[in-house]
Length: 74
Image (cartoon, rainbow, N blue to C red; front, side, top):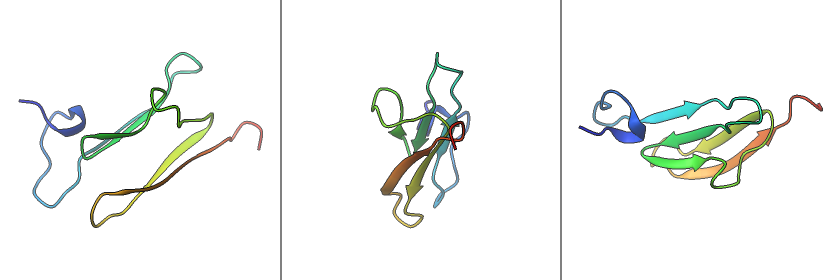
């Protein structure tokens, strides 16, 4: 069976599934999946160098904001 965000197990009721994949240098970009929706990825062109963060409403799971913090250049 397929589970949300490609996880190995289903989440209990009233829980959100998520998966965060770290990038690999300049070869593979990071991605963030939340409740079976890709929030950030190189395909969506909304990732950056450094820390990539997605702010999600904890009640309904809606995406509020995304951002990247470049830790290399300060």
